Image 1 (spheres, helix red, strand yellow):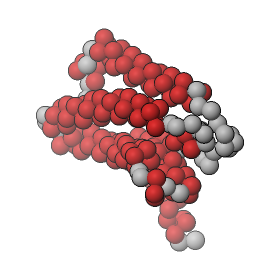
Image 2 (cartoon, helix red, strand yellow):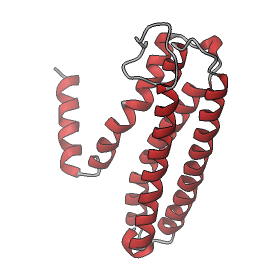
Image 3 (cartoon, helix red, strand yellow):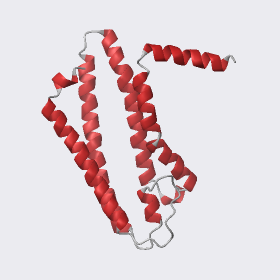
Image 4 (spheres, one colour):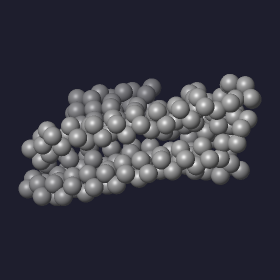
Length: 182
């Protein structure tokens, strides 16, 4: 896609700074909120990492205002990121559709579509995890959803990009055939 020629180095630096800055600000907000909570129900969470909703369950104070404040900030941040992602994909789609080569378009779409599926999985599971009603919240459901957005996207992304390698595809097909016919 000739990304470097379409987007200048200054724009790339600004996008990186915005991503790092907003991530840092979000982390500081959640960390400050977490450390200011009095915990009276122990300090063991029912997760494999300290997720904010799980920590809020351990608090003995009224966490409504803290939850709303953190949620509003996070939703604004996520909405901004979502808009940026949509605008980026529209620009990518326009650039791909302008490609003269059918093979080039196919190659670009073969990477973009699986990546978009992973981003969609990540966003939808986070939305479900943080906005689901407490009435359907169970420790096992919370764990499954957390694994879906913490473990699966980072694990699948390298697979998506490496599947463009023909040698890897051939090896994977051979391994699958060995497993099926053994």
